[in-house]
Length: 186
Image (cartoon, rainbow, N blue to C red; front, side, top):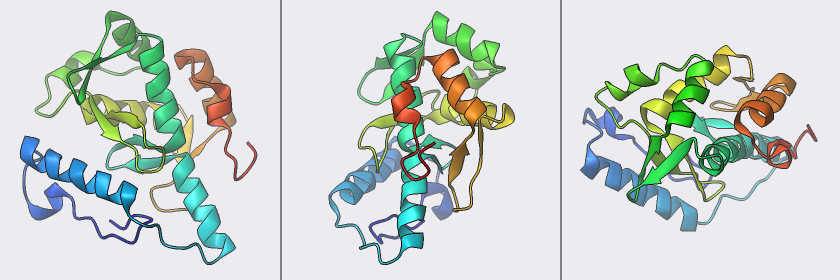
């Protein structure tokens, strides 16, 4: 994977390794290095538009990232649906289980998976955490199924639909201003 810094990042499963705590620590360290690395200069309008699209909404492995991912995570924490525990994990409260269950997320099934349930993932563009783990992946799948997010023209890029913007504000209490895509004004 290429980041905006020009650094090539190989992910643990690309090496044939399990994503255990040690490998997760290495991935987190690489993320921090990307935050302090000098970004590649933007040399064209197309590059600028692509960078803006990825900054706004994208996938990060199998979960939602960018300004939209951070806004959703912030709203879930602010409304006490998601509770930070320890240094890197979240837990879903009873309110959160009801909220996401109402959207079709099988929370009980996710808790039985052999992977982290809900984890903080530092967003490399927003420098704030977004939701990863089994819950983050299921939430992204749910938002795609609802049509609130659709694939964009940029690899890994996502587009927040008008229905999605309204739904995220209504269902999760997201800050509407944080969901305004500066590139399109929408």
